[in-house]
Image 1 (cartoon, rainbow, N blue to C red):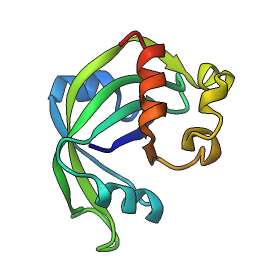
Image 2: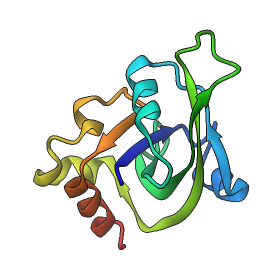
Image 3: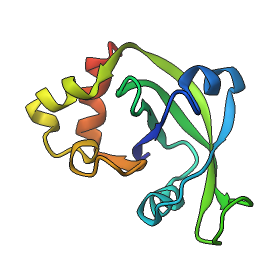
Image 4: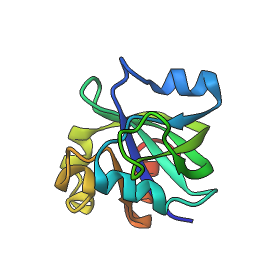
Length: 135
């Protein structure tokens, strides 16, 4: 199982909206690197749900329910959708400030590639953030 982090602005698509749906496609990814990351996802992989811009915090865990398939709304065949199902919220949200303050997370893609909306997370980073989040 690989682990990932996906970002969404909560005023557009929030953790609560996704949790209400249960399973939903991750839409509107128009960055080639992020799209390639989505294409690499496999059913059962886990992802942190991160609220960007407003909140700037990891709020929950998703699981890949359906692997990459063509995005019918995309301007290019390169872009895809991945369906995620809600797994569980973090007991304590983990803020970007907390992540930046944690030396063991200094190389996390969230800091190094802050504009990327879909990124891989190492097993070590996953474990640290889960612990910080009360899991």
